[in-house]
Length: 340
Length: 254
Image (cartoon, rainbow over all chains, first blue to last red; front, side, top):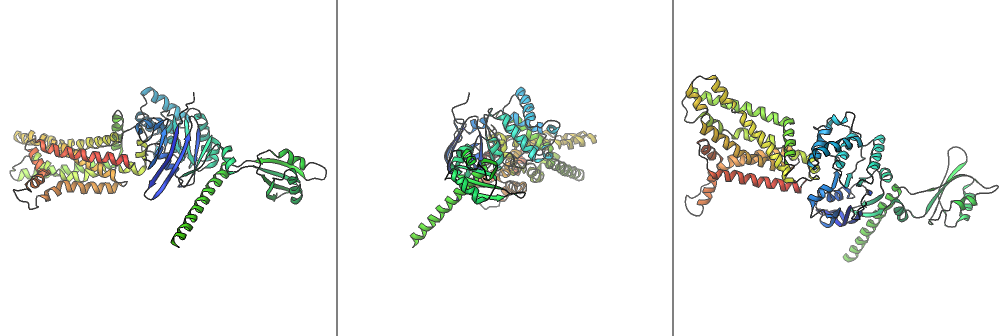
């Protein structure tokens, strides 16, 4: 049964380091069982937020709750509820993988039988078997070290798992393995994954929270974010014919369609033309109809191009940079006026 | 506290695998062996007032200056530098337990090193056939008193070392801070006696306090078989103070 209490709830969370505001009044929620991506450029405040949620850092103001428990008032309890893999994944170099996991299982309070079972399960899940489990952590490659970190985070089957940059340094095969692993964990626990490798987040996360300069600039599912940051539809057409003729015909299908981009493919006379429309209505049938008939350009392909998370991320972070720049220059102008 | 045993086992393992422990152990036993040999040699040349054990424990400060920094400098500073300390604190573990396990593990190793020096009188007794010499070598008052003093002062020295290690990410800085702290505790307190203070009047208590801090005086009392409660209060309260500061630093600066 899915719990109605959000797994994570942050309200007006702020963290100041001297004069710098690393996290600036951020509020967000993560529902039980969700897989949420925490996105943002370097220095956006992702790691600081995660450290606050795990109780490693105290917030300057605001409050956070984990499974309904206050992080500030019940730090000991929330440590039972969270499995955390910090950024850079610090591990003791001189321990063997199973030895390390056994130690972590003990301090996480697993009893002897659960310990053995869970270590076996996480070794299997994180693909750390076939001799890797006996190796010294210091001798493992970056990818295997990341797996050990993830194995540790999920070891005690916490209801919430927070992974800070888990895919950094992984090769494509390892990333595929990571994706598979997240799929296996989906529904069993709430997962918060911080990353700036956007295609990964896009593939595994139900929802994204985008941070920039310590603030939440966007939060929602990909379609919700697309509606906000990349509204309307973009159509890509591969067609034989002159650009002006195609543009005229396509615009006759719907006045809202605007030519975005066009280029001729290197071989042959086919063009790839992009149109956008602020309307969310599917205009594909009308575009096809407008280009169908004798002596009209030949369509080879038409498709709706959806904004990727990368497009949304760029739009969201660009917007806040622009906003903050405008606010800064606005306040500078006010200050100049005051001085004048 | 239920995790204490797991942490203690882990810390003992860390010490057992750390090259610094072996360097400290070998240097300690070499130096103390040499000192014991010198003491025995002096006994063969002229009659001595004190027993070999009393003279041996009188130089406790020589190994303390390098063994304690070598053993403690890594404890928290290295974990903080690697980031494994924050990894520990995300588990349901109290920082108190983390620091206590480190302290106890290092303290046990420190006691183990001193216990190894028992081999010196044992070997000497094995080599001699003079019964009187055997009695002097194993004088219970000076041996037990000396070991009790080493065990008691060791709590403060190691607590200071762990505290210095919790102040920084650098093992080197932690080691230097510990050395300076030990120097101030052992030699600095002796310099306080040079401060001219009146024998009576309101400053009499200050003079008494300076006398109370004399580590060498404590050793002399212990090796004479005088077990006074005041040094216990001094060393254990100092240990507790540095221990609490270390826990606070680990909690705040993970």
